[in-house]
Each structure stands twice: as C-alpha cells, then as structure tokens.
Length: 394
Image (cartoon, rainbow, N blue to C red; front, side, top):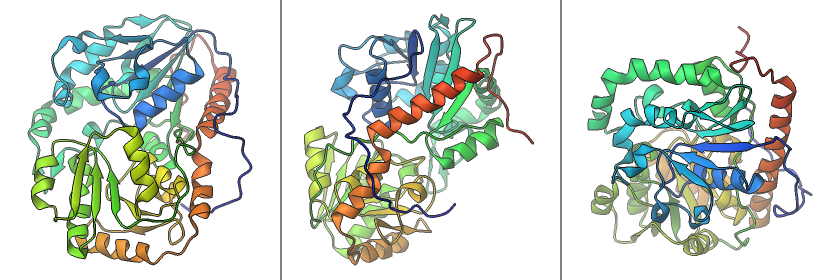
C-alpha cells in the first residue's frame, strides 16, 4: 500500500448542507450502545443523515455512551434487560438470538453498523440490506483479540468450543447482505479474505472542525479503551522510560494493571467529557496509538488539532498518517520501538496546519458523500429477489 500524501483541500465545511440519498424508509442496526467510541460516532452520523430511522441494538446504556443518543428512536433486544454494562462482552452467546429476536425489520433499507453482530439482523423480503463493516468479528478471526502476554483470557477459553458454529452464522449473515462497505482498505482486505466479498471503502466520519489547530504542548496523549489488543501498556512503559508526561483517556479491564505500571507523570482521566478531550487534543505534544486499528479516528482527530501521531505501522494508521510528516510509524510492538518512535516524533517540524490539511480528507461531509455514492451504486445493482452481496471473482 502506498503512503498517503497531503493534498490541498477546498471541500466545504463539514456542517454544510448535504442532501442524503432518498432510500425510502431506513433502519439502522448497531451492535451495542454502551461505549463512547468511533463506531458510536458513525451511528450518530448515520442517524443525522436519516433522522427518522429507528436504531436497533442489543443493549443501550445512556450513561455509558454519547448523550446525543438521548431522544432518538432506539429499540433494544431482550439483552437490554440483563443488568450488565462493563461485562457486556461476556454475553457473546446471546447476541445472535438477540438480533434475530427483532424478527424481519420492516424498512426499505436496513443499514447494519457492525463489528460482529448487527449484520445478523434480518430485513423483510424486498428490502435492501447494507453492512457498514468495522471488521469481521475479531473474537472469531483474530486469536490475539482477547489475549494478553500470551495467556488466553478466560473469555477466549469459553469461546473456543463455540467458534465453529459462530463462524457459520457469521458468514451466512454476511452473505445475506446486498452490499458491504468497509471503513478502510485494511478492513476491505479482511472482508475479502474472510467472506469472499468486495467491500468498497467509505472512511468513518471525523469531526475535524471540533478542534482548533494549535502549537504542540508537552504531554503525550492516549485516547483508547483499555483492552489488551490496544497495547496501551507499551505507551505507558515508553513514557516512563523517557520520563515524559502522559495523559490517558478511557477505561477498561486493564485500568488497574496500567495504574500499577505507570510512572509518576502519567495521569488517568477515565471516561472524560468531550470538552476535556478536545482540550487535551489541542494541548498535547503527540497522540500515541500502539495497537492495530481498523481505521483509527483518534489519529485523525489528533492531526486535525495539528498534532503528530505515533502509531503502529499496521492497519488504518498506514492510510491516515503520513510517516515522517504527520507522525511516526513503528514496526514492532515493543517498548523500545515505541520509545524510539516517540523520540523521532519530537523531532518533527511539520507545521500544525499541514497536519490539519491531511485530516480534512476524513471529515463528516466526506463520509456523507461516500455513503451517498455507495448506497446509490448499491441501489442501482439491487435486485429485490436476490439474497446477498456479490462474491469476489476468483
């Protein structure tokens, strides 16, 4: 994959009016609404495009996700009645029946925002089913997703006997869709490999205008769920080795372990208000991403604020970060490699406004235009009597 380049941009404001494609009655389906992540921001953008569309999801925890979901037409499954929030991943055997429990969703177009479950929802006969895919289910196709330090997590050991059946349901559901859309070229290749489907790319929406472009500050910043595959432990160790200040926004099961290993200049902010996150983005020295991201909205938000990114040279970072210009990519997930990349990032002299120009490629308007383009193309190909997306030619 060739490295991205920065080109001048003359696109309109992200808030400029853009008429979404006329699709009739639209329904949106999402895995779960109990996190403040990039996928949830995508659902909000879809809901803004089609305000009348109901949002179907397995569970909804208003206090644990973005306030903007309040007041929208959110329809939950029986899983919502289980008093679980942080431990929601342990309910994995219940998600396939949860989405089947909606029956056949009555809409002209059903758009599933899926990283593993939402695409299992079914639509009425004659409806067009579209999947916006963050990645084929990590817990089914990536053995490192729930592991840390080479030791299988308890959830992974419980999942192993069920993998064969869950993969069968997953692949069957994928082939029921009439169109697949990927969030990045990295995910497009995974979809091709796992499902045998081609999934054109529409990059997720990034609110590039919510931050000011300001000079670099003095502290490193991490905005991440604290999960094993995110490898925040490497950034904590590297910051301690270099004696640098580090701010960490986000929560997760590794919080206590990271607190114990962090240096005195590391501060954990937990689930922080959006206004505080904006301030941290605008005043940090660099944003660090040590895990393989499917796309990586945080890396784009950092560049929108004129800040460079230190990132693992796999996944979406290769599409969003210009190595040696808007950030530094490292090849191995070790403390030494992360520390070297942070040191190299400190030496970058790229003007903040040039970094922001790179981020503009991933604006909310660019997402809306991309979705309109792909949905229009899917509509032209759509045959109401067909039952699935077109497979990739051998």
